[in-house]
Length: 237
Image 1 (cartoon, helix red, strand yellow):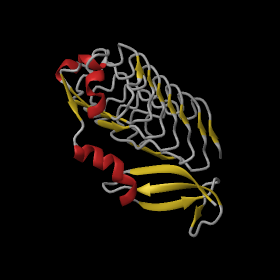
Image 2 (cartoon, helix red, strand yellow):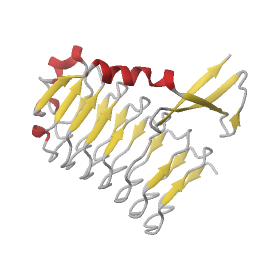
Image 3 (cartoon, helix red, strand yellow):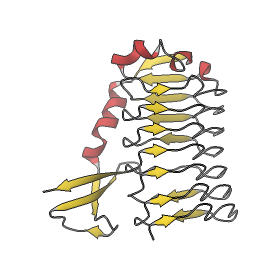
């Protein structure tokens, strides 16, 4: 199977978990929307885009690990996932579309990687419990002024690279945070050294694990300390 179609599991209200096989590259819009008992999702390592409304209204989803193959998170992809407490966006993502995490009212922490160059309208709007945003992006992403609309960021803390600190203080919506501070050496170190502490597993492009990879293109899955998983595509010559 390579594709999960539009609304494939729409409003499957008793579905509690889903493991999507690594052969899947495309998930259609609203595929799991309003699956309000869904608590966990295992994503395929070849997925490149999380489509519109894919997990909108999955109000029991407590955590998720977006694979490092995803480059775009589209409109309303995780909107109204009210049980999400934190989200770490992988280094592969370059664009977060409008309303992507809108109405995630339990969200307290967001980590935005250096790869992100664009954040759309109200992407993190109405995230009323937001306390910390860790933004590693430098230069500052192109962002709509209402990215955090209704999220009370005047009471939240923005953590950014020290070299870009003054820039963030001058540009909306970032300047509207109540507290803007430089990322600590520890925070920078954790981000930069994660790959060096990971156990690696190699998969070919069909999703089959390869014990001893030789020449070719492989997907590398890294098991990071603390249960986190990151993926990357690697060429071996």
